[in-house]
Image (cartoon, rainbow, N blue to C red):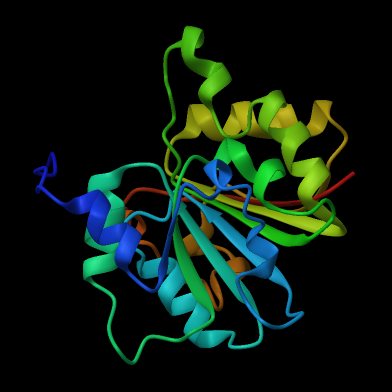
Length: 212
């Protein structure tokens, strides 16, 4: 379902205390958003925010940033926030390709790629978040033992990503093509898409790789 544009969405995000809008345009380093030295985890494409909210609640000693490039989706995410939500996460309205501009090198412990756009046309593969150009950015911002956690229902995207990670020398920690019938499902936090796909009986691919 296509989300309806509501006038004032961007202004709402600019004024919301738990959202950060286009930090790359202000030369702002997100490392300074929290007044602590806790590990930093980033989700690229946080959607309506279910995953990052629930994960932040479970891990109060980790700082979270959920990136969302659609103003309409980011707005809905911000509108769904509650007063009792934890204070260890922000929603960032911006593209994920700016990570090296808004984070210090070697400062992100984990990056989540949950049900990213598969960009199925070969001419669009360079837009995939596991394309070589993105992997080079991840290498810059991840810590020495930093990880990428990826989940997708799209088999083509998953196989492409596995190949990309192998070619670039990333260390595989976990790889499964049926997460919900594997030992790795324990402590799994589902996204909105994942809940729907599981109800439909779709298999969920998951991998964890460590920075080379």
